[in-house]
Image (cartoon, rainbow, N blue to C red; front, side, top):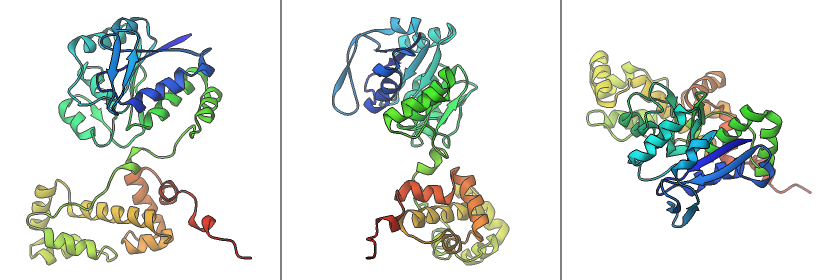
Length: 320
């Protein structure tokens, strides 16, 4: 039997801990997995949602685990040295080490993500990359499987990863059975990118007026020459200054604003994909889908279903 141990760090995210408990620890899965919760020391562990959970075992439980799952925790200061050492020892002994959401910070602090690809909650991805530059952070995926080390994106993405691990261990049928019990999709389309907030960029020191003007004229075929002319700069000088101030090129910035507006229209209106493409200046529906999928790793139609649920027409009263 495959043993799974969840390591509950101080101020553990309760939902993150509940995911492996439901996937691996449910009574229906006792023929496939044994499941336990441990902590740095046995006893009560505070959660981020105002109540405590009881961890019956200490770090010794990691020594016999086949899989170790580290749920998210807060604040992201890294675990105690003895916790990092226990994780390293377990990994060196052959345990599969997994993180849910910000649990990746514990794996990174232990050095288990060095030279590997990893993910975490999109809000914390930049911080993970800054604190641990040896990690190749990808904020756009739902999970990352590196074999003996796997990481999931924000919160509910832990479900996707845990089902993936069951699929790896016991096949698709077992994973689908658990997904049905949990009333979740066995496999979700796209990645974490589709859930990232996309606010309009804050005004820029030198180009605030031009950026505001561009946002009001997204439907038009704007070019760097157009933006530079509005700002009163030569195109080459404008492009260099813009890149220095924003870290991106004018055209990439413009595309990001168009995608942000497209997301808003898909979430809040019933405009066709073609109409959204026209209003945002993304050209033909085919070109719109290409840019949208490249940026968000999902299609406009899938994005709309995600945020609007059932088609609004299905909610309208039937004519008699």
